[in-house]
Length: 106
Image (cartoon, rainbow, N blue to C red; front, side, top):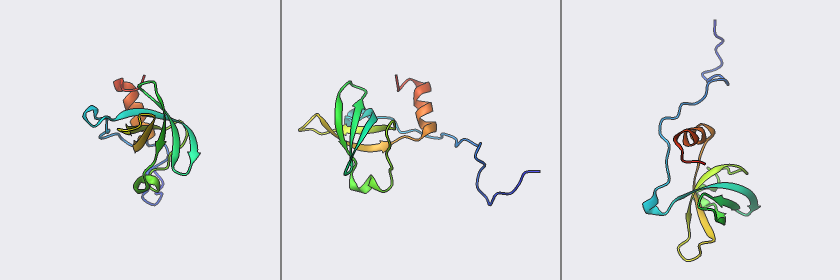
């Protein structure tokens, strides 16, 4: 008989991926990997287009989106300075696995 653990799912159950947000080319969005945390809402990003950019996490997302090294994120490069970008989305582990299976990550 399965033990009731207060309504929480068991640790072995992987969350199902229902929808995954993909980068929108018309909005100039790019996938990137966080390579270093710089502090003060700033990170170093290795982008899929081969450019290393400094990313900024907006204040509206700072508390909700805890970013660590190695995370896959969606960024939008600044129009006036291509070496900097805004971090707009962070993927969870199941979403990253889905992106790898579908060929978005190389």
